[in-house]
Length: 548
Ligand code: FBP
View 1 (cartoon, helix red, strand yellow):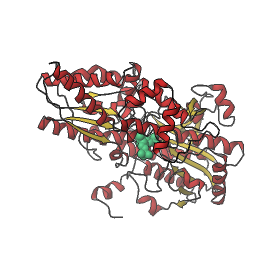
View 2 (view 1 turned 180 degrees about the vertical axis):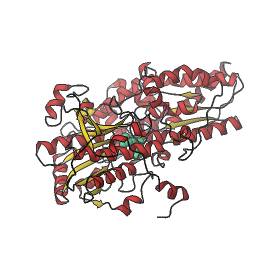
View 3 (view 1 turned 120 degrees about the vertical axis):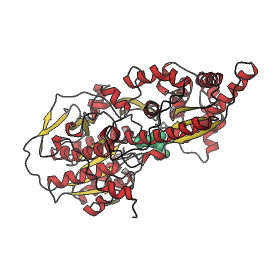
View 4 (view 1 turned 30 degrees about the vertical axis):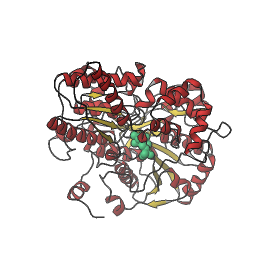
């Protein structure tokens, strides 16, 4: 593989580890834990992995381990730093015993079920240290939930002598990791399962997990691009840029990018829901900002739109909930099969309540169509395929045209559209993500060495220098509650949405009026890997505000 000069230099970077992980460790156990909701049901469903304590690792004299074979899976959407989780785990198991082996299952959880794998070697791992992407073994969205999949998995794990499996994923994949951990524990199969918190969306976080990996790099990459657009926008002064940002559900990415770039407007889905705003209310809010700037002679600006917005508009949320029910076959709990998209849409229209049908029919045809079509394997609407940025700018243009007729607006409105998602998911990891991910992987080897299963690898105190980071593990059941999925109640990790009383949102809300009216853009520039620490080693503004 031909490498750029940066890649060659970056390969030599040695990610930092918390002090506690540098030598042998001992596990300090906290008190027994409880799930965040539905305790009785979760306890009954996870009798072998419920109630375990939070673990913190401290320096100590642990005995030398026998060689162990470990497997790893990358699951779901790509996130910068995944290769460092693998290299951290590889180095971790080798320091436990140089004869330990690490296997990677190919193209996501499907690789475990279909017995597709590779064995890592020094040369193989070295090619991928500190690089972005998941291409080292590929990723996939196969949902691990059926007994037949778990049984197929154990066959290959036994064949390769694998005693522990690490699953790198978001809330859905880690929920499945926990179900697998419980199944193997119940059957006494002798295979531990450990999760790692990944997703650029930033919604896998709680009091134990400060942030999911990849969020830092993805937000910095998008913020660089937004900054570039803002400079262009402020140079030509003739366009409004409508920028949709990834983040399937929560608006953490949009909020962080707003904190980094100070755009003229940024929608936060959670606020739209809380204020029970309709699509028309959202459009009026944006059109007013455009009109106010036009009154000052500024016919240009930037608007950030979270990808998941549409699902948070209460009427549309209610519609989607019914669509999800209707699209699931109650007999099997699986998605219904249709011969064509048209057949699916007409089935949906014939089977939903009149008020929801009215909402569906009020939406532009392309949006309505996408809402009626297939979900991803975890039952999520594929919001990355809905062009909200075009929908909103079209509706703002219509509103401004009305206001022009009424003499309330006399500006010029010309829009450009962008969607930043895939651009950031495989970027070379920032120093933060390179260090955090390496530590998460290395730490997973210590959870394995301590015989843990059903735990997620955690690294805390990450706003301090890496030396002072705290390593340990949290039982996955602790993060669970029951939610309705595909027509039935299921145990799932609770997703972290933007907290409207949290410091990041409050900071944004306190400043947004000024950013709307005045042109107060910040141009963050590219991620820096070398240089002064205040430039190169910063965490996200979200994390800094949350932890301050
Ligand atoms: P994960 O939750 O698996 O990390 O993926 C998140 C995400 O990047 C969302 O932001 C986006 O909506 C979705 O993946 C896109 O999925 P796909 O890669 O399948 O198009």
